[in-house]
Image (cartoon, rainbow, N blue to C red; front, top):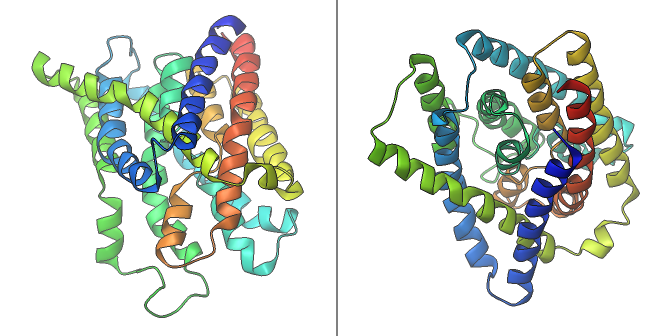
Length: 317
């Protein structure tokens, strides 16, 4: 894949993010609008994009590729969970903030940003690996992630850990549609044109809405203040540059398919995700660390992801 194509696609994404900043500055999208749009993207558009990606005629992956994707997704999160315990100590964070840096390390923006970017700049078969990673994300966040977030909290504000509550959280539109999409792929099912076109039209709205919302979130934050946080820059170097580079070099050395290598590398390179912040806000936590990390890492990721995808596309394709 040429640098020109990657820059063009990432340039489009940057413009969409800039539109979100403009929408916030002009008062077009206030906090309530942002919240409603987020629900639309998470519960409707992104699930539709997942299914539309599986129905794409360019997808040539096999059943074996799906099994490989499952193994790679599991391996990636074993690595991230281990790194999540180490990163707070590497960054020398305050004891009371270590769980936030743990969550930032493990639960990045694999869906909200990862899926649209994968569709825009990676080979068609990469989406299979991206979807599998997002299934693992959902399964882990509402078990391991909620346990980390609730560590040390008691009483009514502590996250609910019962089996029923965990199951309700795991069974969400994104996870359900991801599993349905994998079943559609495995069984080689075809939707009637009226349904297939509907899913495609809804899914196509994801890229604009999700990128615009990222822009709104950046505009809402005190970006000039957050960008001076040295600890976040160390996190960026270690988590968003060094880790995906090592992952892609290792997968290339082990002769994995380039589509798999680029997809898993992208999943390792995406910025801090919104879900830990949303859940922390629900239980009354101070989310300033998570908010600043989301704003800075999202802005920087436009550069780091472009550089990593170009470098490894040139090496692999």
